[in-house]
Image (cartoon, rainbow, N blue to C red):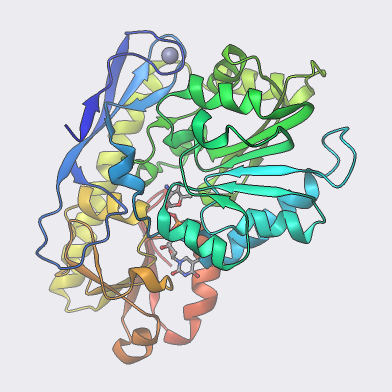
Length: 402
Ligand code: DWN
Ligand code: ZN
């Protein structure tokens, strides 16, 4: 079986899981297809709320070997993300009392953007862990030290503990959080710091960001739920920051040296409690807003098609796959999606038959509208396409034309 059903909460073990959103059966968002007719396998895409710890989690777990065997998403394509990593590497240099140069491991290092930022910031020994062969090979080509494997005991056995361990956009992808965090605990020096970043569930709800829901993202976290998961592994959250990357992420700092938490911890916990994020009804009303976005998007696509307008997308993103598949959009609505990732060009967005092309086609086709399917990089994408003279469609948090 290439997927399993979730029967209990992966943070607290509760069986009281209530479904609040059903995005239907969808293809795997990053399974870029070689042909438009390739019938991509579809899996249930439903989100459950844990009545005990408020974790939101998918109802199924797709085999990670299927998801990450050969991964088309290259983090370095986005200048915004590269700058985000450079800032992070500098920002955390003095977070630990360890002597410099610091040693660091980046879990799910993708094509090494953060590892390169560590080296640029003067860190000592750095190590990446990346399960996707194509990305690990890219790191090796760039002279980065990387283990081509998942983050687990056997793969890390011969590596000593380090001062800094980072996990950017991977914690939401992990099924066995206990094993994951247990290994973090083991591989962290006594006064080391673990830093994770995930899309922030409160933002997903406030900003109607349902397109961040896809099969790679098994969990959708509040800070309070992350804090609980860390605590079970002997790690204590001592700081939390909010950052705009990827539509709004939280960055959580954890340690095992018993240092005091700063005021950000109670601030986030109080905001989540008073914001209603620990209550099921908040998520039910969110689901209603998601469906009205879908209906609005579908009618806009129909109106533009009837008006003979040319619409292209920019960013063959996983979030774009969720949006387009949930709204039933195909190549008859969006003629093509531009993406600067060479590995994605010449292929097709899963489930839609929409071809993925290079940006040079924008000048040839001169679309009337560009759908920013990577709206989290709107500024960067608008800068790149201003010369085209098209108007922009953005679907999140509301469908709008700019
Ligand atoms: O968690 C994840 C997030 C961090 O990244 C992964 N599971 C998968 C991935 O999700 P996504 O594909 O929705 O992420 P992005 O970063 O919103 O995707 C942006 C897409 O747009 C990429 O395919 C790259 C492309 N792009 C481009 O072609 N030119 C992006 C920029 C900024 C550009 O200038
Ligand atoms: Zn729970």
